[in-house]
Length: 495
Ligand SMILES: C[S@@+](CC[C@H](N)C(=O)[O-])C[C@H]1O[C@@H](n2cnc3c(N)ncnc32)[C@H](O)[C@@H]1O
Image (cartoon, rainbow, N blue to C red; front, side):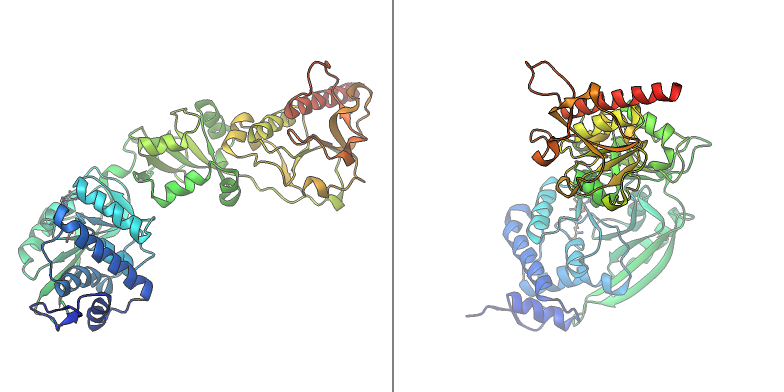
């Protein structure tokens, strides 16, 4: 038999998914099945963990739907929700979780100081598939400086206290939404008095929970000054906003992590520059490429001579260490990757040396790029097989030379026409000493391990080595050939 529950205020509804939908519909909230599934899952988690964690004192089904979920959703109908939005003192997730269910694209941060509730929130986000929700598991104080466009808060404390607490994070023009009961005039007056010059009252909307006598107020303050702790305070330095990231779920951090892989670098057109020497070199010589400065924990801001457009991202130490795969502990740079136009084999090879790279190991790609730049190779054609030259490992092995090279995107090894003047490299080819380098030619080392396809080997050149060693490393062999080519070119130029 269906269990019907009636609260003091609502018509009886079956205590289940259908009853939940009925109450929502009566309140003018129409959810898709997927949204209702999420709210139902959240409800079941609240019920399951409530006896152990004391998450809410409301137990009656209809009251839970009305006073917790509907109550949480309604502010999103009365005010435009700022995003990113932090729910300060969210407890078991109110109003944040129902708001996120109602507005799936909302960039939400849930701030909660009590550890057990934080664990509950993690479970909720995992079960609901909210992997973009950031959980801030600590008490929010004025030094909290993750920039947000808005804060929402329900049943936490007096407004003036909250406005003090969010001084470091709410951006100028951002909003603080207070979900209050009807009698909050004195609180509003105190907040206005103590925060004059920082916050103005933007809206004060009175409403009732539909079909009940319960009165509510949504009080919205707007920030009119700049957050205090967000700009470099040393005189003369550019005003730079710091984006502090504390959660591994932060979308920006997730983007940064993708840059540890060649595919991520290719997709984003950005790379991570690590190591004190390399970052200093790139910041000095390729300044126009620098887009961001990534620091660890409370390390100081970027040097004042980096332009204001360069963003500053301060990662929690554990997050920084995840990105710092070389263990440098030095600030990293986020840098833009230069354009790589396509090379059409039909257009032939231009004067000088075109180095064709098939290497799959990023360190080999980096090493050969470094040699190519050192010996004056005119252009580097990256074959489809090649690792990305701005993969962090490749960039590091290149010593930053990748920023000086001219790259073109080429076809795969199997699509290279054998009619072009391409000199393949293979240890069973003819000795380098006897080779004539054409005025325009391509140099083609083999893939690590597999070497060159048989079709290319008949005209290959070799670096003679002792029979005791099977072969040279492909990047090393290429460097030796490039040295020989550049040596002869210098002799020709001098004569
Ligand atoms: C009364 S509960 C309200 C929870 C929820 N907003 C609701 O309406 O059901 C207040 C919550 O705020 C949390 N809290 C209080 N001060 C906080 C702060 N400065 N930063 C983060 N959380 C805080 C408490 O741990 C508690 O879980």
